[in-house]
Image (cartoon, rainbow, N blue to C red; front, side):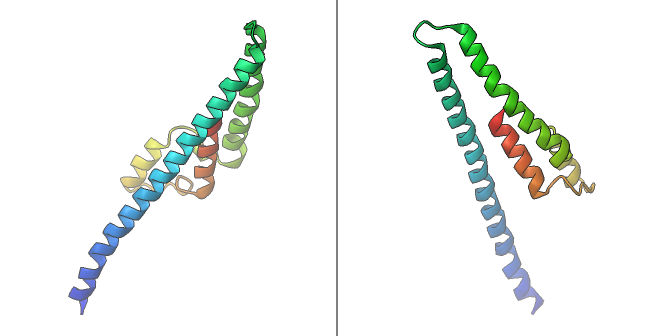
Amino acid sequence: DPLCLLGFLQPLKWAMTVVMAVIIALLAGGIILGAYHLGQWKLQKLDEMMGPEKNHVYGFGWLLAYALPACFVASVLVTFVEPSSGGSGIPEIKAYLNGIEFPRALKFSTWVCRCVGLILV
């Protein structure tokens, strides 16, 4: 009976929506926690590098030594691994929701490159 099938599909759609929302929220929380802990580690090492005399040259050197490889990794991921992961992704998603096809916008590698870039930088 088609009406029975329609009654089953509506709760299934809502359940899938809730599950996807929970997964996305957990992933966003993981990105936020990863960036927070990496930032805390970076500041702790900065404090250790500057020492009790607060030598700002050593502090600047540490921040530079962290930032250059982190930016290099993020830029290599965007340039060579997944070019569509550059930028915020909001225009791509808005266009996708309006019916325009973006084959690389929703790939797993795009997501991984964006997450690594967000955490590192």
